[in-house]
Length: 154
Length: 265
Image 1: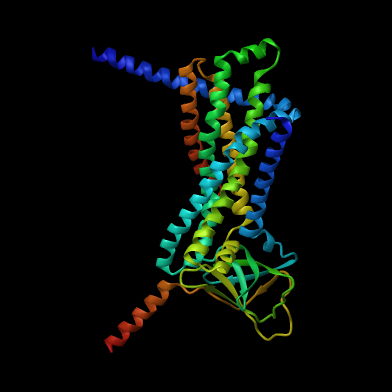
Image 2: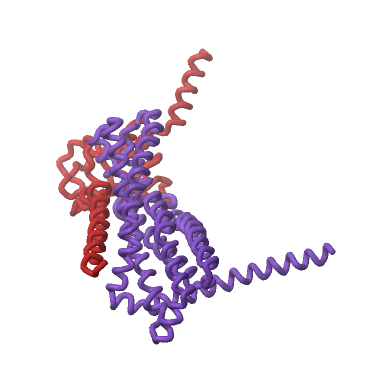
């Protein structure tokens, strides 16, 4: 086989290989949507974060508005300190309530923003005061059993 | 005498162990030499391009077809399991993550080892058996720079491209079975996939894995070829050893890389 044909085939091979990488990056992965551009950081402390993970979505009204950037344990307050990166296009009032929700029964957990009515908006680096912990299934069940037992003993 | 038999067994064991360690040291020195002499392979790049044709382009068909079938099987099996939990929309995540993280790099590397690695070993081994390598040395051409290094780099370059193609074809196969044949919702198939496949965490780690596998396969293949006994049996034994050793090395390296990359997160 002469050189030109060889080069042509190798060029074709490299081109479709890179096209496959592009397909994976844009259509399969989140490269197209992850670069939302400007973000600002918010902190919040939860009593219990359940199964929340880093990179979990932050949603308001079901729309993804940011991602969980970091989760740490605060040794002073014995709470979970969660920091989030929020898309700079979206501003939220200062009395927004943060909840940890689950999408579907077995789905992933996310941070939900219940928007309040304050006129002042949250700024970069602010800490959200009002938070609601994740629902732990075992606690719910034990509460239910406890109530049931109390009812029966009456 | 039992004592005598025991001594001989221990001697044999010791000899085999030292032999293995000696070979490992020689292989490491050989890799160093290959990398040091790869200036020629990269400067006269058409040597490497020729080898990319033989290792990469000629492996395209087997990689593309296997990728398609692996993806289609993942689609069928994944759907069967997921629909029991009522979450068949997650089929896209299952297919994409298992291909991009594991199956793409690993299965493509196993196929590449048996398709291209064995051919490299046989070619270099035969060159040695027919004394072409000695002839090159006589002409003051370094066989490591002229024969070994281009084949090594061709393998390192081809492997990630083949792994990407394998993953892309597999996802396409999963899409064909899942969406077109079974009827999973197309929108949620792609959007759930995009929401949980991360470019840096998943796709780039897969690319890094396939680079490592490419280097391992090429290293083992050129070494076994260069080191083989210059006889017909020697070449056939070396070819077999290439496939067996590189398959085992790929799986072991995959475990180590996975443990490093995906621990906990």
